[in-house]
Image (cartoon, rainbow, N blue to C red; front, side, top):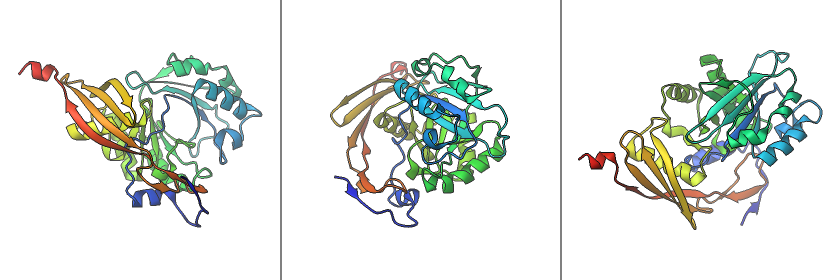
Length: 314
């Protein structure tokens, strides 16, 4: 049962979440297709509704994105000339075949010509394909105070360290884990970042590695499978980005079994996770929330090592 509450003055959801030691693993928003539009702001509480987008664009984008199951986000860079041609990025966060497309438009209305159903299907929208990663830090303070207070210093540090591939981004989910960062195209969510930690995470990605201490999960996977992957990586001390490949998953009741193959050895692992609805208690999950809500908890049950090339050669 959820309970009503009156938000306390000065309450900060990120501090409360950290104080109760709420786990990060298995909390990434489950999104596979993203469309990012450069817009300097202000963004308001709800970016597509409240930002000063061209007339009617926000509502039309919201409707089309909902139908295609694409997440539309607004991005910006401090100090960038607002008169510059807006940047548009399409990203498909497939667990094994992620990609980025990016370009500029003369008018943001031009994004209505993009086929969002194609984006969701992973077939591209016709923008130039680009390599590398984008590091998108949530700084959406009108949506949640923690995103501004904890996100803006992180975004500023990344902007100094790597100005060409870092952005501020509107609400991406999980305010209580601020500072939050989304890494595209792989769809990795990171939380509780400090400015120093964010720069280290970005450097790790450049080297093809994940930073497990701050990793919330990969958005292209269901939350229990995110938890399973992170648990297996911790068990194997494996941080290489492409070292594990999900080959199968199944769910029965509250239990999920995810099977991963290790790229280097061929060894397969079954990772069993139990999701306990409300296992994390009931809490105020955002700074603006007026009701306490249950927090699910994903618990590792067991990791089962199966046969692979490593065993056959011994």
